[in-house]
Length: 157
Image (cartoon, rainbow, N blue to C red):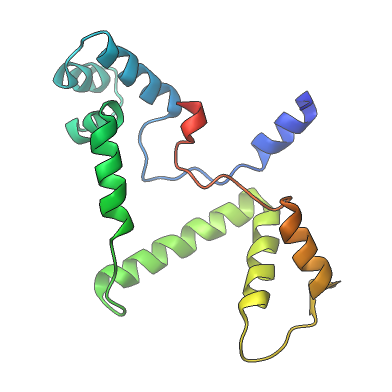
């Protein structure tokens, strides 16, 4: 991958997720401190003294692989009751995040529009943004519109 390709990929990364206070570098540091024998409470105090607002739970999540896997399993089972206040807040949050991602990378909006057209059941779509449905599907299958779906990509940690 050339330097231009890397710069282009970085420019097209999704907008930053405001729910996360730590970066991949912070996670690496937490894990290194833990491997060196530092307690989770000491790591928590150190990061907060440096002005990085983390809770003990965040430290535990990132330094304890078993805890992280259990939490991911629990999150995967989560469901929302349609029309509930929690569901309404979740939908609004997701829509705002989607718009931020579209501003950061217009290809994500194109991907969304193509997927929406493919999922449309009320009528048959023949074109999407000036291309035929066959061309749009080929573009989707080519992988050119894929983006990482992780808050902190595992390969960075």
